Length: 338
Image (cartoon, rainbow, N blue to C red; front, top):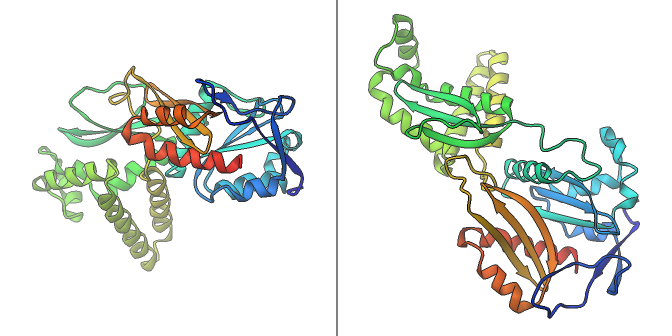
């Protein structure tokens, strides 16, 4: 039941020079009892990743959610097609969570964590979705889809990674529908010229269309918003004409584009991934959250306890672009262990 107790156990405030793992049952500690409902109530209803631990601190399960609070609460209700997890629920002693900028970002974080370590109750090694890159060729102008491990020529425009083979192909179709750069080639067949003319596209439009495509795939907010609005217009126009199959197809493209073009920072493509390693740390009220950034992914995530001096030093050493993310999740971790 949602009101069943969950033990929230913390060590005394640390003054040691090194952070220590938050204590669990059986260690010398200050204890408190809360219902699982009280803990879940402090989760935000935002996208993210959650992790369950048992009383010994072992990770039981890692999952992603479009709404953290609702998803975590669901484990104490009807599990539906997740009935195999019913035996896990009584073992849950702690709930940890990371807030992400989008469901797509949460999907990448879940995948990266599961690739490094698969808890007992997770069936899949890594995520089920395929990671893909989108490549925009200048000549002849076109969009290609490649596996993220493929290394395209250095002078090509590379975007991604994007997660989910079906979604990526729908996004490519949507981009071609709105910005058909293939009809701006210098050498077009007679049929291609006719198709381009129907769509109002000619070779002279190449630079403008290429700029639009690059803006969309780069996740420029204004470009993405305009692109999604145009898809809605095409969908509604098709529906008004009774072309319901076409309207349904465009709706599928819109959903895939909305998912894939949302903010996503927690996985980068091979062109940006480097061998450099960084620890992304945030500290709040005695709680330190540490993310291990390795080769373009977050590979591990830990919740530790340490004093203010060390906590601030670790947080200050975090690269500036990651401090807001790390601090936000340190505040969340501290609230879950309040």
